[in-house]
Length: 485
Image (cartoon, rainbow, N blue to C red; front, side, top):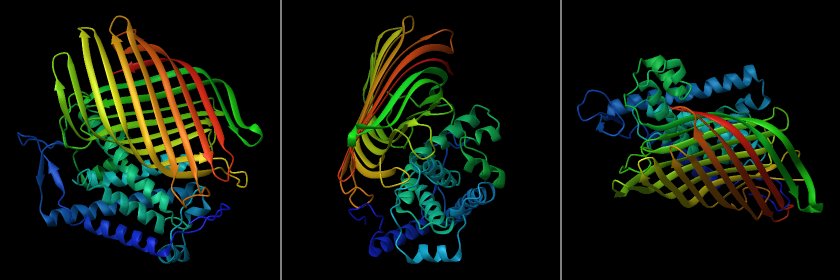
């Protein structure tokens, strides 16, 4: 729990004991879960959508292999932190391990936002994929994420184990892990050399090196893949209400690079296999000194169906899993201006209308519940800003109007509201509002090359009990060139 003055305290021992017991139970259950390999209808090579069971003994063997690879992952990261970075917190002792088994885990709000909300999802995706490459399914592989995260918190750091790190790593691993797993298979199907393909999925690369495993041939499923480079002018400002004091401001030029991918047909989806369709975009913009714009946006269907499918109109709808991250403003590993993280379950509708042979309209709408969200807020009594954890609601709307001769016009509006979870930070009460909007016009130069301009706007408003309220905004205009597959 947390005192009203912002001092960190620990959760009740009873809650902690139950959480540890559940984590251990989940990790043991993975050895009894009937994992499935997948095969096409002709039985020649494995794919994702056709499943065949295997025996309990073979499942247990692959479960033990996956568990061993999960521990190997922790060992490699631990070695890097100790030998290369020489971090004091990365050197566990017998006493720290004993403490993590006997004392209540804490809710730790002082770790860096980018470290926790980007680093932990990526680390969780590696754990997740030790399950996927050993033949376990989407939901089954979360057991490896829980195993890896609980082992890391218990054995691999000197610090007291962190409940919020465990939650972030385990829950975010589904989105990041499945996306990287499918992109890895896509890269292998395209003939990308194994060492390069392993950049998408280190767990698969290590597993292939150790066991000689051959990735299943899932065919080519990318609907769109785009990389881009851009440069533009940005201005950002962060203010606290106490004396209307400016915390950070920037005006100047920055560069940006990013990629986006659409896997599967967004508008023709009738599947109960998670992430048969997903969309994923990641970008980074900076001026190498003061300003940073780091974003990750994703959504993937857990199940979907297509109620409309005609020559002119197509629509899919279903339940989707989302992982969104924005850190925009101050160029710093720990602090930023607008920091937003949302892991959410939404209902999604994706619609396309073909006007003519060369013109179309697309609309994509998501709305639902953010079950684990994070913001960062100003604390005048701390050396670092602190994180605020909570749940809330979100909605995302994306519109596209395209004509092959006139070009492509895209617009999007994302909105989030986050309410603090009680007794998880120095805030007894807090509400954070985010609004992100952008408009983009682009036009093809060649078959694969296009150029365009984007206007991007972001705003955050934080209302806190016992801490100053905050107002943050960013506006940027950029020119870019993009290459499409």
